[in-house]
Length: 419
Ligand code: SF4
Image (cartoon, rainbow, N blue to C red; front, side, top):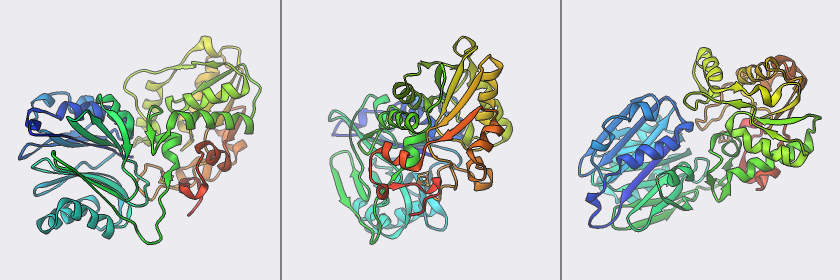
């Protein structure tokens, strides 16, 4: 998972703006999409780079206000940072199918810019490089080149601060956190160039390619205050909970949603089942996503730091524990154990998605099938492994109904559906 962001000031007074602090807050809002590294690059005639390994508020906290630049890009990422080639910097999300990945794509864009305009060079990249990706590129004069490939699998949303600034980000919530108004999405196959004085657009199609939405964004990856491709993530998650309650009812005294992603799903389950929603856990420390963290120790510490049960909410009660998805089952086992240790009589686990069965070919951090507990064990077997009294997944049909778009407009590959 990766979060990208680009911002540029407009007009003759644009040199008075400094965008580094905007990038800082925007990337903080995208932190859940990548926790291992953060980079920003700004432009004011030269390129200025800052960042490194670590979370945003640790890595960028000092000196960010001293970084000059009236346009800039940023990235939060599990591994790599921004690529720079000559006069061009690029933040990318997804997987361009090109030997050398993002580094090669940046160098290709840089060479194309020697003989083509920014809009033509960006169109050429989408025309010639297959894969599923979005990118935001920046030249030292502050021109932003924004592109979302025709598959549409990596999201990009557009925001504005009146007539003063324009921005794009992986999620609309990052735009709002920067004080911007979310105004549109970058459409699949769309290229946008902003040079501070004008906005130019073009559209690219690929023969035989239809655009699809990444279903995992709505289940897990995106923040629930984001709107992606005009679909509010919160509304989809509440609907998932309602459908889950229809498909997998349980007798219980309380519904609890864990982690934070699952709280709207739990609210939907509670609404449809009539079982009260309770706040079953308090979290400590920085928000971490344990399922995508590197080592087993990191994951265990992440779980313990994140989740401390609220005994008064669960003691002597039968609990429906709602989670968004299950990767290895490690987090879930710890959560069930914590609930029982704090007095829960029975724990019925309800998962707001089908079993994960395959990694994502487009760089979303889903492990290989032998690490995915849902790819080899039945619901009852997983319940036994995690110590739950019952466990049920949302059906594939239930997921599609909850998102509310036709099946062929969705990527469902990590749930085991090829297409
Ligand atoms: Fe999204 Fe899963 Fe498709 Fe990857 S495989 S694009 S995570 S739905």
